[in-house]
Image: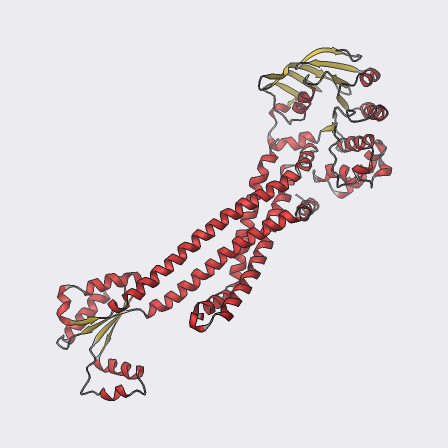
Length: 225
Length: 304
């Protein structure tokens, strides 16, 4: 499903990504771990087309996304879900509106919005709080809303960049459980984290990065640097 | 783009305008000021043009002939001058016609009693009207040639020359100042509006980023800002129109006749006759400035 070939990205003298090769199959859950500055976030940015690599290719469903044109970008982004450490919710919009916004910007009709939003809010367990504003929610709840928003287009790939970074352990577990649930529904989940306890608990494929390189890739791994 | 998404996009633009109402007000005021300056000068220039035109149509050169000049010579000269491309009209005024004019001008005064067919000292003349005031000079120097000198007693252009030239200079001066000031204000307005829209965009950087990441198309991000720009233009146009309407009304009614209320009246008349054109022009200029500034400011944020 995803094939990364010889991906390199340099910022000044720093090699953020150094010849990355990685293959991810349908339905996989992959934890991308490594210390700060290992290149995890850069890899995520290249995957979401926020950054262009200096060289290398990323094939998703046999299409090289590093060659996407500007006008193709929105359509690609609707096929991937992205979750951030800082949630990136709009503070003046309610839970419902934040999730609906992702459909509105894609010109979805009202009926589709009214069908999809409650279903996805139910999936992440936030339907009861649909009328609350983000600042009335806990960190864990906000991240659930953010996950709901990223899943609204029914993406085949969900990229979660340090989603538990701002959360206490209990909330972090809940978010990881939610990601596993989403993965079990057939979505590829790419999770970047440096939380050892989380990675050890997931017991799925672990890719370790250091200084822009992949240093280990184990199918049922644990966090080891 | 369907009706529902157009509605959402326009609503987003209006919400943004309201959310940044202070910034929006400043941008609108600056733009209104610009439109005010542009339209004031446009109306002033047109009014001055009209005034000058009416004065110019009265400006002419009169050639007064000696008693010795024969009718044939005068007719010959009339033909030569009339054939010049810059001449509009050459009219022969006979002694009798001159006497009639004189009588009309001084009606009821004693002086006309001294004028009778037997004793008429008024000379025959040619009244020349030029196509435009600038060519009067050329015509005057043409008449000043040696071969005509023996026939001519006097040419009246010299007396009016200073007034004519002053008027021409004043008109072009007002036009120049109008252009320069309008230009300066357009530049200021563009800079302020660019800055305002940039600030508005900066305040919503996160929102734009989220929009991009959830797959919003470029138009969905761009158009709310364009709507905002259009709104600046439309509000500014109406505001400028209101100000100019009040302003001209005030000038026209308050100018003492001694100071020449003529121009004020002409401006008011022109404004009343062309109110739709004025507001139309203000709307067009306002909307163009607003839209161009919005598109220019947002373009950086659309990439990737």
